[in-house]
Amino acid sequence: MYDRLTRKDIQKMEQEVEHRKIVVRKQLLEEVKEARAQGDLSENFEYKAAKKEKNQNESRIRYLEKMIKTAKIIEDDSNENEVGLNDTVVLYIEEDDCEEEYKIVTTVRCDVMNNMISIESPMGRALLKHREGDRVYIAINDKEGYYAQIKKICKSDDESESISRY
Image 1 (cartoon, rainbow, N blue to C red):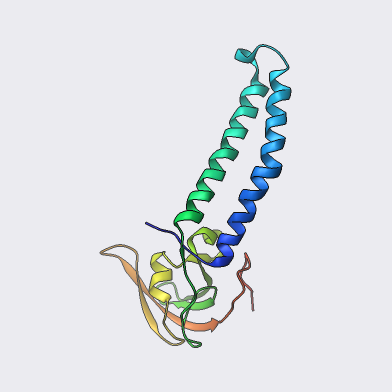
Image 2: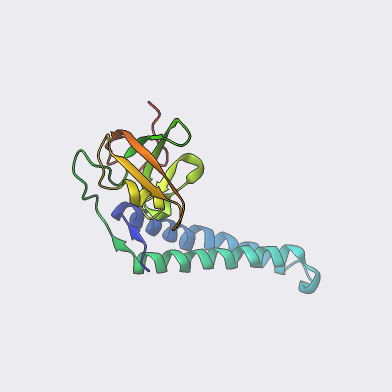
């Protein structure tokens, strides 16, 4: 399955790959050389740690390059009065009798701890293309779910890493 990403997501990943290849890779290779120079490699913790960090960097580079190569570029095609990508939504959760605020983002930017939910998540899929006042069923699985009412939609093209509190 392809990740659905915006052009800005791709751009950020390309910048990270470039930084890791030019800056981080050079630093880690130097650390491996320094640790290797300390002597017996079989009991050299610094060497093993430096090699592990170098390998993690290379793994991250491969991961990002694969994501960039296989990504499906998406645009927000929602109408002005509908929930779309990068919009902040205030929901009234009927079951809990409370309001919650979420920002709808792509999969690589989701951060549930900061109320940034993916368009691929059950809540994200349920909310997309709905309007203020709509009562939406959010399925947790085949048998469970809950209802939420969309109280407010704050439209945004901003792909910032946090939601605005108002």
